[in-house]
Length: 316
Image 1: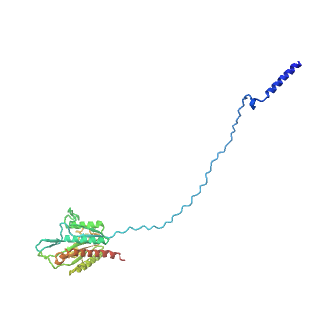
Image 2: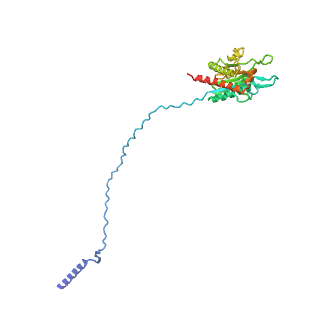
Image 3: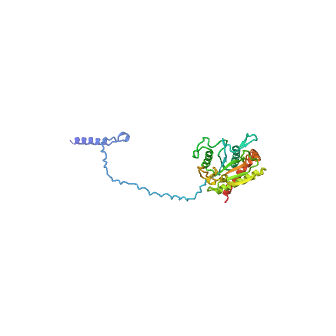
């Protein structure tokens, strides 16, 4: 019995020794034992909500205050004066005429007026003025034969009213109407020794003083220029236009110069004169009016007078 117990003990001891021996490769082969998954305990931690506080804005630097410096606005350059030059008559209206001894036509006032007016225009343009020519060719100003002044008639007064309307609409500063004179005896014979220069103005306008001043300047320059041509000129002076008619109360003013009357529907609106340069019927003067050099000298005289008129205006 004792032997049996001893054998059993030894067998158990052997089993213990075997179970404790190392496994080849140095690793202990242990059976897979289910490992319990770790228990994760969710902890509800209150998280404080952090609302970002916007930074205090830095005020912008003060805007510099603009110092208002007075700006000098340049004044528009004033336009030079506008001079209206009217070549009297034209077209079918010949004005005064010069005829040969046999009665044939030599030349007409309308042609001479135009020749001088064109020259005056060129001279004034050369001096820097603006120029308005009421005509620059041989034509009338009312070709459609309208009743321009509304008097119920169609005649030369309508042509003259058209000229007035033209210079008024253009805003001319002055008006110079160029004409030539003539003298014929009642028997129809011309007077070869009746001549001279005369300038008319109207004394019944708000600017009558300017009318007279312009007339005097033109008369003086013409007399000087024509005398310098070697002609013994008769200076007929400056005259008020109603002297052309025996009844000044009847409103018989020159149409281009006078105030409103039953004959002048719309009067001119600027200082003006009507100049009778020379007499076509005078022998020597008719020669001068056909001489280009003489016409140049006459035109220069007109231009000098007009220039002096504006120069005097600017003199303080």
